[in-house]
Amino acid sequence: MKVRVGINGYGTIGKRTATAINMQDDMEVVGVTKTKPTYEAVAANDLGLPLYVPDESADSFKKAGIKIAGTIKDMYKKADIVVDCTPGSVAEAYKKEYADAGIKGIFQGGEDHSLTGISFNASANYKESWGAQFSRVVSCNTTGLIRTLYPVDKYFKIQSAFATLIRRSADPSDSKNGPINAVEPVLKIPTHHGPDVQSIMPWINIQTMAVKVPTTLMHLHTVTVKLGTEATTEDIVALWKKTPRVKLVSGKSGIKSSAQIMELARDLGRPRGDMYEIVVWEDGTKVVGDTLYFYQAVHQESDVIPEIVDCIRSMCRMEEDPLVSMEKTDKAMGI
Ligand code: NAD
Image (cartoon, rainbow, N blue to C red; front, side):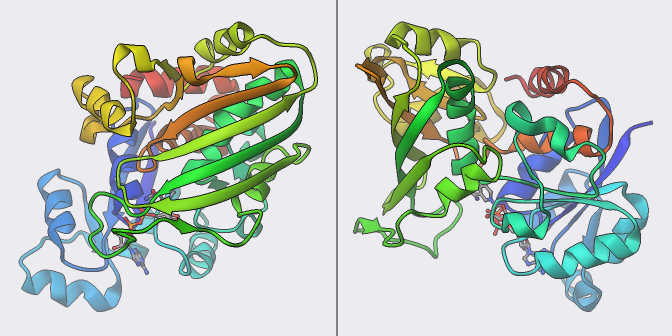
């Protein structure tokens, strides 16, 4: 029998999670939620996804002529697990509702680690969420840093790491946020990203800074890593070539910026033009002495999606081997 998944919050992450889950043969979406009768609610209806809404919103959906399957609490009765994709600040209350309904819940990187006490990345700590009632898939940036740093640490022992995150200012569908003509440093140093990496790799010595720039496509990281054992540029590139969900590209082949990466994702026919992998420039990677330097790009809207699928398999005890789960997820999603 397939594991039944409800998705609370059908926005940027929620809609992609729904698509990815329905591509798997061992889980299915039993409902998605919307709070307002927007175009996304209409699209969910058009896609045949049962739509659940807060009690107090039912009338506004009826008035807008949008079919609903029931209230959010009705969705809990149909689900084994809820993927909570709501924006920050409401998760605490929802966690209590999931607990009262006796179902599991996965939260997103906008929430603190303390909400669940367990954070998730498939390569680094799949087993920590095994059978758990609650877990949290770390943010897009943290997922990006862990995907590349975890294997480097495993094989070449990271002494220290420093990353500057050049962050997109808003998602493409967001016309409210900015800046649109400025570069904005995050003044709290280190930013929350380093400690967030440590929620999965507590032993790593990492510091991060961040700058918001006027783009919507992707984040870009510049990363400097002091290695504990000897390695060449070729060793590092060879390691990432065999690392799941890391994609090597080169400027020589025409990929000079996030614009061409997004074009490549569209060319590959990915749903919504998504790039699930962390993209590393092979010709922008270099070891000098004991220090590794590289650039990587993170598609913030989608890199966490395969991780959410694997987190469901771990929490619902569906597959013990992380590599088998990742391979299954990736094959179904065309990664
Ligand atoms: P979003 O604003 O695109 O979507 C949030 C959805 O939740 C919307 O559909 C909204 O209608 C719904 N919602 C709002 N209040 C609600 C409530 N009280 N009950 C139920 N639904 C409600 O947000 P998003 O970008 O998908 O982010 C969701 C989570 O994922 C956040 O924790 C965020 O930090 C994390 N995340 C976002 C990104 C990204 O780049 N967008 C990347 C990784 C992780």
